Length: 138
Image (cartoon, rainbow, N blue to C red; front, side, top):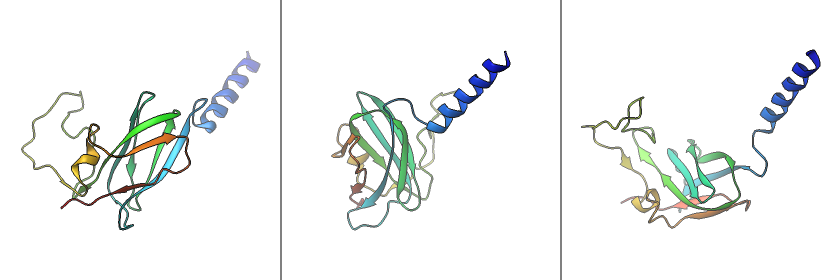
């Protein structure tokens, strides 16, 4: 029994250290404006046949998506001013839609980047270059 517990513990540690399942990648890149300034708040989402993956954009424009399967993805980017980007901002803890009288945060980028049907961005994983350039909102 002790040998089984030790093997099980080792297997859990090895799997945890690896971080991803077989064939997946951690995608790291930088979201910036066309002038080179970083997009300092927001979310990057990869949407494709292999699934959807998302990650927050840091103050330096860097983002990481974990466990991404190989494939081609439409890339959706949101960037907001004055409030934190929050994918579930209109839902309560139980997942119920909640009406809000609060004005939505002002977008820093063109609306098309946040719309899966209109985004001009796409990425193929693995490719090695996951940097994203976006245009500022008017």
